Length: 140
Image (cartoon, rainbow, N blue to C red; front, side, top):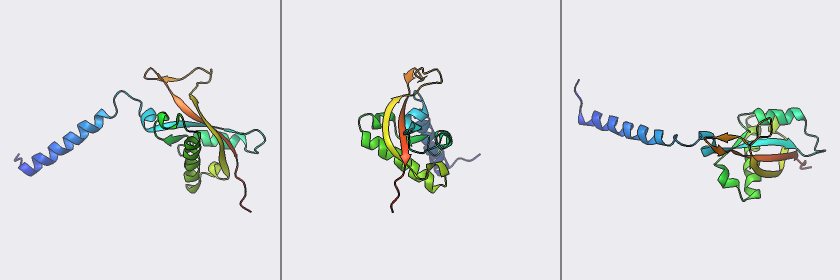
């Protein structure tokens, strides 16, 4: 096999990119690094059904927002805006459950399992945004 300088540089460049990229995935759970989970509930008396909440919590389009939880830890408006943007985007993708709902409150808390225990991944607590929804007010 004849290896030209051009071929060698292509392979060397691709190898360097692969090695650098692989290092991003060590030490942290990818979900915790690139996104923050969202857990939905409905404000009492809002008229939002349990089925809607279940669909939103299970949808891959609505169950997380971009960015590590540290981005949302101290800013209520930023949390609300991030979750609302996610819902708006999902609604445009025809996720019916995301239509006609808006974020009333959004708090950051530990992710918990069915027993109420704090979930740990890689030895660290996992945070989620708990979003309470209400029906969108009509524009008319």
